[in-house]
Image (cartoon, rainbow, N blue to C red; front, side, top):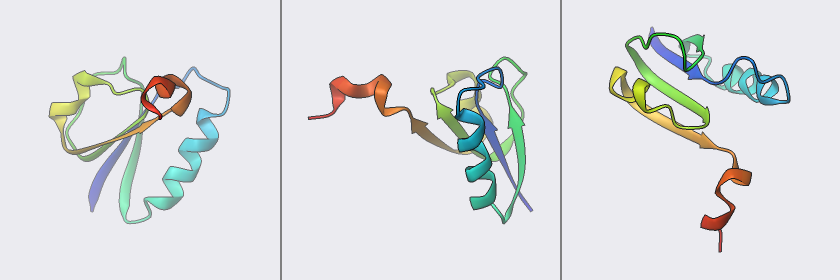
Length: 78
């Protein structure tokens, strides 16, 4: 089974937890692990960076996906 890691700030209790629960349901074909960016990185097939890209985790995944918070990137929107 493929391994997916959801990387997010676990201390954030303002809605990121709900987002992560939705992502976990979407990843039915994966073995899903939840990780905080401060935890040591571990190898996985898919790393999903929720809200902020965590550069230390990137080399540990075969594929990286970034789910950015649009509020943080407003200057990039036309």
